[in-house]
Image (cartoon, rainbow, N blue to C red; front, side):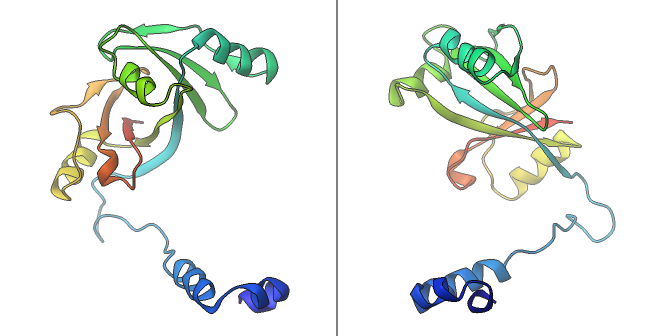
Length: 174
């Protein structure tokens, strides 16, 4: 397939690289339910990508004034130790996170990443409790004992990045 679509690229690519590409493309399979009868839950759409920022007003200005996006007012979430602002896009949101106090998990993130950066991705599920149960059964570490109410007023659960290909994943009830 690769040589017929991109002949010059194929000539330059090592046989090892071609084998890797071929193996990767053949491993892509359609999403299947957890069971053949009725799945307990389904993974939904990307709700948001969260970005930690050391300067919330500057980040809001970038998205609102420079890029022209619709931006929500800041909202303090003391239970999570953050102030959040949502940048509304056509197909998803960007969640700007700023520490609310010194004990904020975002303060710790910014201590390691002074310029800020992507903090987590949030994916909707249609049954958060069933999804959390499955994660635990599959030995994926959840960061709290129980779901908590997130920024959208819905139950959420964060999954440990070491169990999720290095990415902090938030599951949110759709």
